[in-house]
Amino acid sequence: MIRGAIKSKKVDRVLVIPTGMPCFKPARKVTLSPYRFYMVKAALKDEPKCEVCDIEQVFGEKSYTVETLKNLRKEKVVSDKDELFLMCGSDLLFEFESWYLPEEILAQAKLLCALRPGIDEGQARNQAAHLEEIFGTKVKFFQIDGVEVASSAIRSRADWSSEKGIPDAVREFIKCHDLYCEDAPLLHVSDEMYQTLMKHCFTLFRELSGKRLLHSMNVCVLATRYAMRFGADPDKCALAALLHDCAKELPEKVQIDLAAKIIHGYIPGKQILHSPAGAVYAREHYGVEDQEVLDAIQFHTVGREVMTITDKIVYLADKLEPARDYDDLTEIRRCAETDLDAAMIECYLAIKESFGKKGMEIHEDTKKSLAYIRAHRGEKGGEA
Ligand SMILES: [Fe+2]
Ligand SMILES: [Fe+2]
Image (cartoon, rainbow, N blue to C red):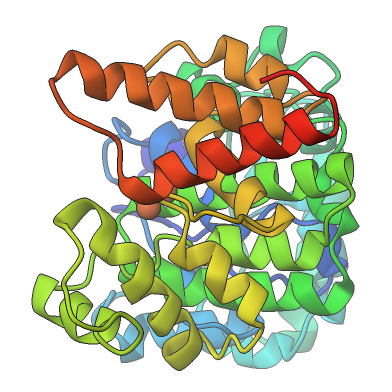
């Protein structure tokens, strides 16, 4: 559609605006919006005359088209002189009257409708004439080549890996972040928590780089899966996991000041600093009050002697999320299929080994945690 519009010379450039918070789809069924945003960016990276616009990602409101169109001018994404077209498929012509404030939409932009092979062009043109009459607008058309890809088929994983028409970059993105997995872990968090996670994604979008935000969302999904697997609270795990690195891109001075509120007498090293800082930041900036969640954020880098189940799950999900590829994680991931403590021990030992190779010792708290988990398993007759 983008290429067809450019080729038709009816537009100079195309702005692609991934939806932030959809108005009509049930919120729970929607992939967290930054996934969609960065996936679209990957897909259109090399597309000429086309930009991906984050205007709906930065406002944490329901994304009504009319508001987005107004915001484009308000935020100077387009100039007052630019003429705007809302690009659509012919099916939209038949729904348009039921949209929120259609006449106000048309005061901001005209409709530019794609005609693809196989649709009934006569019907589309009749409907366009109907809209032109009631709204006093002018609907424009352009031709495109047909591509048959239904998004619902991709999401249900009707073998999207061989689906034609999906750009390689998108295929790679879906694979790397393990999207649309069959167990859809976030379905297990409460409705209220899902809304909270969506809301925090808007703030995180402004505060974290794309890579770190994608990492945080991957950790969130994986931690929720582990919560279901090991009988922990999915809401607590999802929230702590999403926010675990929330302070990591703040200036060091700010992180030190935050961490100093809960750690007294010394400043943790650079790699660890963001975890206590993150716990304070999650409380002050994201309004998290649950101490168990704050603890899991505070102890996600080196652990602590006695780890709660939430601590362990966030710790492991951080190390094992699907986009992590720095080491061979196969064995630890395999342990995490069935045995949380075994996976913790494997993970600590892998870190110990890699530190050892660099002539370094693991953190005191990690040692204590390892010893505690081993002893605890020993007590129960388990093997470490
Ligand atoms: Fe971290
Ligand atoms: Fe992390």
